[in-house]
Length: 214
Length: 281
Image (cartoon, rainbow over the protein chains, first blue to last red):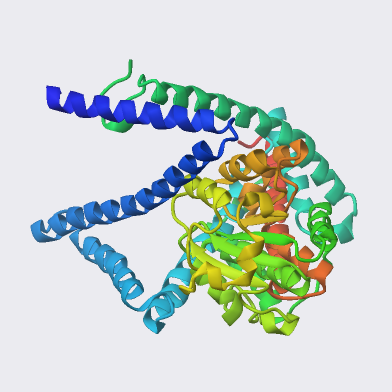
């Protein structure tokens, strides 16, 4: 790493630390000038994040254009990707989302395709349920029974078979699922706090394309 | 016997797909009208909106996407109808790029939206009773910005300055919100942190089935008031509001699909157990 890159990285770390600690402290302060400044910075942040999208589009376009001109691996899908990216973008910018071609692309191509991908899961689930979801031992049996009960509780028609499915499924979700996920959530939250503090104090630098951590 | 069970266990997946296809196609051709009983969560959401005093500010985060369309869009439509029916001030905003298209679809009707919603039918006037502020990019940063300053967009989705929209006088910051209802498949924790934890605004989620388990611990802690889960949540709400629409119609499909999966698990396990008892592998 050159000294120039090092200086740039140091400046980025200092800006991160100042802005980060400012927001951390501002959360606990009710004082109009400070709160107003924080509001302005978050508004700028929103704009900057929007601009980051443009950078992303630029990079994606450059990468796939190179691939097309070199006729590299999967260069035909690259053409499809660029058309899919730029056609709605240009139409949206020129005519807004109300233009009939834009609406057609969204309602008649994108929407059914997305829906179809999700719907395909139903077929894989039934096949997976038949082949893989077996009570091979006690743990698997408990999981299987709990899974079936929750599944049945989510299907209102099963109430005709036995009205107890819904309360039983709700009990499993409210007690066992909530307890398990609470543990996971607390773990994630502690990890987030630690990572945030490392970023604010400059000990975590990977987001600045740094090679390591201190 | 063992051989026939073995054959059954090794059945080609395509037959299973065919059974599923036939089962989910039946209700589309001939609706069965299987009963739907509203869950406690849907009843809680309904009662909360019913209990809001006139001119309360309801913010809807229309962040639904095409993939979760049938689940979230049906929820959005039925909640939209309920809020429009009441004397409430409705601010709609999208924190997902697809939100604007799906918000439009609710008024125009569509394959995942059902019949068009006409706010005029409920006596609502755009700019006075409801407004759409469009898409705000930026994820969690945008959640914070919008909560601090609801006028951050300067104009509504069609470019009308917010000063010209009387409804916006009711909504300056998150402190003015009486409830926020977010229809989203992700970023739930960020919304909870920036809206409930920071402003104690009652937060209701409309979530796809896969996200529902994440909500239980937040509902137990009171950070999430309640939720509508998946298509069934929308269907339950349609029953509660007596606005029967697409979700209730699609519930037969979901019911038969789920029963097909349960039957597959039971048959698969019976076959496995019988094979084990008879000494097979």
